Image (cartoon, rainbow, N blue to C red; front, side, top):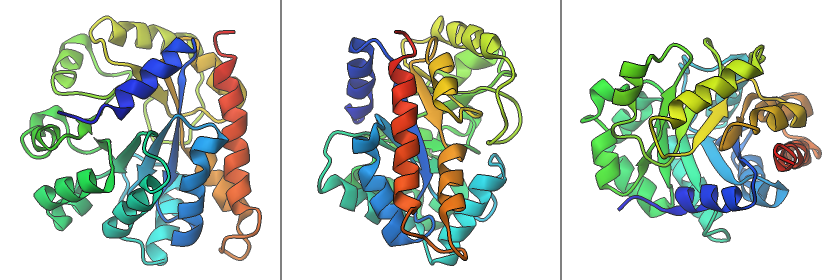
Length: 275
């Protein structure tokens, strides 16, 4: 049975008549200790679910901000093993907040897929978003992940037509991640109405929650997207908050607070999305 933390959290947010706030940070950015402190404080700041990015040297779907976040973490010696260690440390004090690992297949393949799934489950991971594994490759990781008790969350985009959407949803669990635009992370949303229509189209084919990401930067963005979506995903803005707080490339006294303050503002946005 897959982890139920994700389903429970979306259900709890729905009971509160609001979307869930899904926050993305890069594991180990800008260094392990600071990254752990940022991660540990996200729920208190207002995050409902957490996406923890697995640093990778060639993140093809990510814009410059997240690329640089990954480079900072890798330069500090971060590995997939330390990412799992961060989750394990987080679970010492938080047994309820869902954590989804997001990234690319190469590091998992190098780690050993079977060992990774076992170690991720043991650490307290709830799900995976693997950007470069389409449904045609389900036997590679998706099916084994589901058998190991991990949710496998799919991306769908404005170019995903109905016939393909049906196939994408077949083995999806946890939630559906709708990418609000074509291109990479960090751009701005230009058509909120189209995003809402896309969410409605996806929800007609699945009972899973639909979370929208890419281009959401402010509380106002979160409120607008949250009118239709079950979840609002924010990543680049949070990674940028880390970057702008650095002093000579290193964490400063303001780094942790900069991220948590932005999360608190975004949380306020989702709470007025349907007010």
